[in-house]
Structures are given as C-alpha cells and as structure tokens.
Image (cartoon, rainbow, N blue to C red; front, side, top):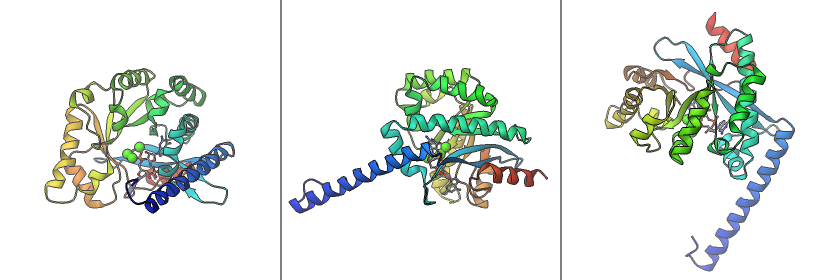
Length: 278
Ligand code: C2E
Ligand code: CA
Ligand code: CA
Ligand code: CA
C-alpha cells in the first residue's frame, strides 16, 4: 500500500493511526471493564449425538460496556493478547468457570464438563499452572470436568514446549481439547504425540457438510482422522437438522451450536438444563 502516489500513502498512514488510537481506547476501556466487573461468561451446551444427552458446556467471554453495548470477544481478545492483558483476563475466566462448574454441581449438574478457552500467551506465562490449580482448589471444581480448549494453530508453534505443558495440565487431572481443528496443518506424528482428549472440528467444515459433492469428504475425513488417532470428536457451529444428520452418519461423537442452544448466562442455563431433564 505504500507504493501508491503520495495521497494514497498519507491516506493509508492516517488510517493506521486511527486504528492504533482505536486499539488504545479499547484497551483502556477493557482495563476499566476488568476493574468494574463488566466481563462475564456465557455457556453453550454440548450434546452427545447418539443419545442427545447434554455432556458439556463451553464458557465464552462477554464484555458489556457501561452503556449496555456488547463487545464480541473476536474484537477485544486479540488486543488483550497483544498487550499481555489476556493473562489477567484468562486467569479470571479460569477461576469464574471453575466456580460456576462447582455452582452447577450444587444444582445437580456436576456431570457437565466445562470447556475453557485458553490463549497461548497464557500457557507461556510461568504462573499458568499454579493459577489453574489454585482456581481448581479454591472453587472445589472437579478437575475431571474441566477441559481447556487450545487452538490447533497454537499447538503447532513451539511443539516441544506445548506438548510438555499439556502433559503438566493433564497431570492435574484436567482435560484438553484441540480447538478449531482442521484449519491448521498439524503433522500426524505431532498430533499423535499431544496429550489431548478430543478434537473440536472447526465451524468452517460444518458449513460444507450437507453438500453432496467432494466438500463433504473433508469433514468426514477429519472426523475419521481424529477417531483413528484415539480422540473423541465434537463439531461446533451446528445450526441445521441436516448437519446433525450428516454428523451422525459420519460417526461424530458430540455437537454444539445454535441448533441446540445459544450461549447463556448461568441462571438461564440452569433453567434450560432443568427443562430438558424434566
Ligand atoms: P471459539 O472458541 O471457536 O468459539 C466458538 C464461537 O462460535 C463462539 O463465538 C460461539 O458463540 C460461536 N457459535 C456457537 N455456535 C454457533 C453456531 O451455531 N453458528 C455460529 N455462526 N456461531 C456459533 P464467540 O463467543 O463470539 O467467541 C469467538 C471466539 O473468541 C472464540 O472462538 C474464542 O476463540 C474466543 N474466546 C471466547 N471466549 C474466550 C475466552 O474466555 N478466552 C479466550 N482466550 N478466548 C475466548
Ligand atoms: Ca473454543
Ligand atoms: Ca472453535
Ligand atoms: Ca475460533
């Protein structure tokens, strides 16, 4: 973009300046949001495809500004990662999710795994493991029902470090899912080596799953690959009955998406779960 005439060049840099100012503004607002407890978690159910049973929930971060505006995580998490603030936010998310897992257990829903998204910046932080184990012990959450979601692309960088880190997380009794699976290009030998419990197929593949042509073979292959390597497989972003049917026929283990439920705050989640139980 810098190769254009001078007008173009200055337009481009002015644009970038606006972008940087916007990021700084957002970062400051985010700092206040943490202090003023404007962050909260919503939970989306995960269902076993065979039985229709709810077996887990994924914690998703939300930020409501003072004027009631909801800022999506895709907008503020990259900025939080870039600034390092994700460490503080991520710790808060882990603690909150563990406490809410324990709360759900008190309501009779202790058998639900809670999935927590974890950024690689958090994993690299020297106090990550102690933060995690403190969140577990302070909340009384059952580690066997806590699952960290790490993205496939993250798992590929720093292969040795990440695989050792996952071993240590597993040693605490916590489960691990590889998120957005199929979008990276992990080598099979590396995948085999990772101490993970399951794969989450990226939403992009679920979109293609109903087509009759070759597009359908990719998600089919991804499911088979995961299962051959010994992982259970969950599909995310399921919106249609036809997708559910296709995933069932492909032998996928679990699914999550708007077809079943949108992410909900805990009180609504408890209502939703109770209604299904009755
Ligand atoms: P993700 O981990 O891949 O989460 C799945 C996203 O898909 C969520 O978006 C969820 O609301 C959305 N989704 C679920 N079902 C459907 C569906 O049927 N159709 C469609 N179109 N979308 C569906 P959300 O909540 O906006 O989160 C976006 C991303 O932000 C997440 O992607 C994750 O990468 C990140 N994120 C969210 N919460 C956290 C967090 O606590 N920590 C970190 N590090 N990242 C988070
Ligand atoms: Ca996720
Ligand atoms: Ca995902
Ligand atoms: Ca994603």
